[in-house]
Image (cartoon, rainbow, N blue to C red; front, top):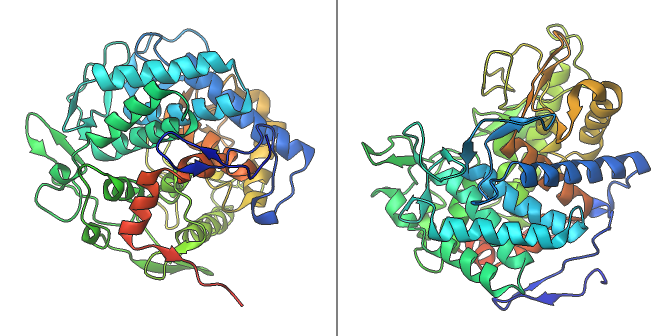
Length: 431
């Protein structure tokens, strides 16, 4: 297959798939060494393995977390967000040949069938957590707008990648198009974060910059229940200067600058003057500089060891990071913090990820790649991996490697409609 030769997908738009083994530089700015290319390939392959082995054989639903060494795991908690990431990773594995292609395609089809026919939903949206073998809601958790959106991203990716499979296209389309985005507004201009049958909509709304961009773009692009364009301008965009960086900021960990970019390619377009790709570059650079400034507290942090975002800790799951300091920081390193920013700052991110694998790999690299988190100061190593963190790692590795997710997802008509209705325009040509 020749890079640049378009394929016509079932819904009438084009996608350039590229060769399965391509190792192309992003923007020509980074040429991979042999070691870097092998690391990116390993991040993809181990993620494919996770999403095969963490999926229930009947439902296709993916476990929220799993033992990092792949040992038998009696836990049964599934995650709709992890299932969404998994659909895209399965597409990636199919394109690369990381596993048997027929098995990967069958798993995608099986998952979509369950989601369409069996998985409990309200107005097309799904519960955050459930028993991964039955789909039954657990913990009286919320019907989640963001976690459902992550699932929709994976489903739309599958309909584009498997464009020649009529059933996959039909199922993915139906799952996405039955979502009633206006119902989730609950009479406001910003989407509610969730809904519970016992108490109705949550009071919290997506009204401040964070990972909400992917939710709104999907809602704007819906051909059946589209959000109005004014919903895109209804959330706040505070700009902060942190050190040498100036960017739209959120009082949240680094992942909020990453998740939307895993699927949506913001390069070459602006939103009322904001370049969201450059914004995430600035946020990542600020995080790196903040990390280096913590050496007096965490002496092992350096250009070789940095990166903190929401993750497990020795005391449980926490939302932590900076700048400024957030959460009970204790020197823990979270590999997906740097991995999720691979397209933004390739050299520093590859540097720390290579160091972690090559120097500390016996401790922190297991069957599914990096453990979720580890502390070089205390020698605590998380026994688990978490599905969404494995997912963001693989998708951003693929985007750096050859823009695979951006190319195979970005031509979907829902994606192009979402950008158009949000008011994005091409970036000005720099002199």
